Each structure stands twice: as structure tokens, then as C-alpha cells.
Image (cartoon, rainbow, N blue to C red; front, side, top):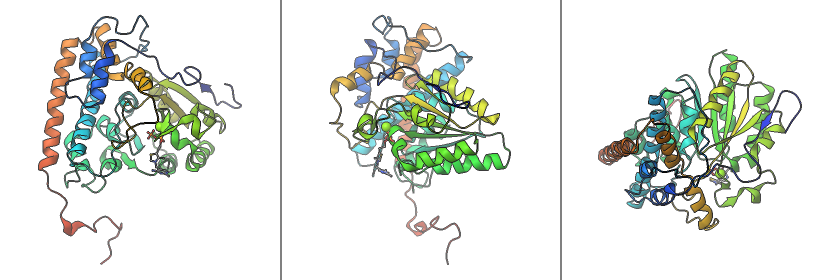
Length: 385
Ligand SMILES: Cc1ncc(C[n+]2csc(CCOP(=O)(O)OP(=O)(O)O)c2C)c(N)n1
Ligand SMILES: [Mg+2]
């Protein structure tokens, strides 16, 4: 779709067929994984061998990454998956309270995009935020402790699942108000430009957030200011229980950016490589003063909106279809085909990650709760006497 000026819109496809699907080997294992079955695992999907795809090519792009980097991508995706499964378990045992939104199925977006950033770049996210924290290198123990409300947590146990943050890593959170963080991210981008820093902001949010006024106002200001920011929309087809086309006539989010003359493109968010490639390229352009950009990652959450969601608004068939394209099983097959990671090595990696997550949960469980005497700390920037 051409628009005036230098803004361009690139689509991966049409309508609501968002991702390249894989089938066969991924189906059963991915389904088990999504329901929290401890050993029904994504690594098994990778280990399945065969074409695993009913004759359809898996179209992951060739990227300039070493085998070690590709394995690191895979490991991070497994780490996020196993972390999320442990959260579901912790929630069931009452160790985690409040709302808790899992990132199962969307791992490739955080892993691919954050790998394209440097330590100086900034990340601002919505509440489905565990995956970004882990991909940014936050300790799984401190991240889990935050969910458990412990003093050793990333935010001192005061934020919980939806408010993870790590200022040292320029990971500014974790916001529960849909679209409320988009103006904050634009503010950071504005400060970067004012200070002439070589830094970029990536602001993550969902398709539902693009129906909120903040989205339009913030993108407009970012466009007018040519700010160094990538708006990374995770289009998972739903805002809570509302299908995307029940909330807006515009179901291709790139079209909303086009209306503001912001260049936008779509990527397959079920594969970390296209997400990485696009983020790296747009980041470079931001550094040259060509921002902002919108990147729409077509993805799908394989579990409910939050842990408390029975997901009655979508059919089992639909979920099964997407589970067949589970990004971890699929990337595992790609790495096996490219002889980067053998199925046996993928299984060993998975076992290592499971042990790491168990240790993280034990750390959280054994950590103290915040001291009640600190209840009013951090309420005011300059505490009142
Ligand atoms: C301003 C505001 N309105 C409503 C809500 C309740 N709410 C929480 S998540 C959500 C859906 C958002 O969907 P989307 O932006 O697509 O993100 P996803 O959960 O799919 O990742 C809603 C409506 C909220 N938190 N904030
Ligand atoms: Mg959504």
C-alpha cells in the first residue's frame, strides 16, 4: 500500500492469515506445553525430525548470525516458555497473586527484537512482560521473585507480574494500563533526540492498544518529531476476549500507521529471525534520523489472555491450528535442518533450562517479603516526613 511522502507499508500477506504454519510434530508437544504438562515439551517438537510440516517449506530467512547466536535465540525462547509454565504452576499454588499474563506462543517477538538492540537502547512494554525481561537478560530468579512479591524481586516485590522493570538494563517496564505507556516511550525517544544520543526505543504493545487514543496521539507526536522509536505491535488477533475485527474495522495495524505517514511493515512473529532482521534494520534507520517506524509482528498467544481466562471466545480448532505452528518447535526444526542444533542437544538444553527455572522458583520461594516498615517507600520521589 503506497502512501505519500517516504512512508511505506509492507505486508506479509492478506486478511487474517498471519503466519506460516507448521504441522505434524509440533502439534501434540506444543499442546502439552501450553497446558503446562511438565514434559510435553517444545524440545520434543524440535527433536521430532522428519519434515514436521506436511510438505510446506519453513521459510525462515537467512540472517548473518553465528550458530552460537542462533542457539542463544532458541535457548531464550525455551527459557521464557519454561518460566511461563512455572508461573502457571506458581499461580495455581497461590504463590503468585493478582493478574498474570503469559507470553506462551509469542516468545519469538521478544527474543528476535531485543537481540537486535544494544545495552544503550530502551524498552518499554505492556503488562505481558515476563518475556521481555528475560530476553533483556534479567535474572530469572529476580524476575520470579517479583511475581512472588518478594523483596529480592526486580521491582522489590512492589510491582508484580505486570510491572517488571530494570533501570540498569534500560527496561522501563511493565505497564498495566493499555496503551498508557506509549506516550512515556515517546517521551524517552524525545529525550534521546534532544540529547543527540545514538539510542533507540522499542515500545511493545498489543493490537487492542491501537484502538486507544494514546496510540494515535503518541504516534502522531513521534512522527512530527522524527523520533528514534520503533512501535512494535504484537498482533495476536485478540484484545482480552475481543476479536480484533470486533474492535476495529482496521485489522492490519500497519494501516493505522499509514494514516500518520509512519513507515510500517509486517513480520512473521512466530519466527525470531524475521523479527530480528526487521528490528535491526529499522534500528539503523532510526539512528540516521529516519524514525519513527511501526513493526507489526503477527503472532498468537497459545494460552488465555491471563491465567484466569478460560478462552471461551475462540474455538479449540483455531488454537490447535496455531499450536501446530508453535514457534519453539518450529525454530527447533529449523535449527536441526540447518545442522545448528541436533534434536538431542535441544533436549539437553531444555533440561538445563528446566533446572535453571526450578532454581529461580526456589530462590523466589525462599526470599523474604518486603519489610512492612518500608510500605510507604517509593511512594513519593522526595519522601514526606
Ligand atoms: C485503559 C485500559 N482499558 C482496559 C484495560 C483492561 N485490559 C487489560 S488487557 C486488555 C486487552 C489488550 O489487548 P492487546 O492490546 O491486544 O494486548 P494483548 O493482551 O493481546 O497482548 C484490556 C482491555 C486496561 N488494562 N486498560
Ligand atoms: Mg492482542
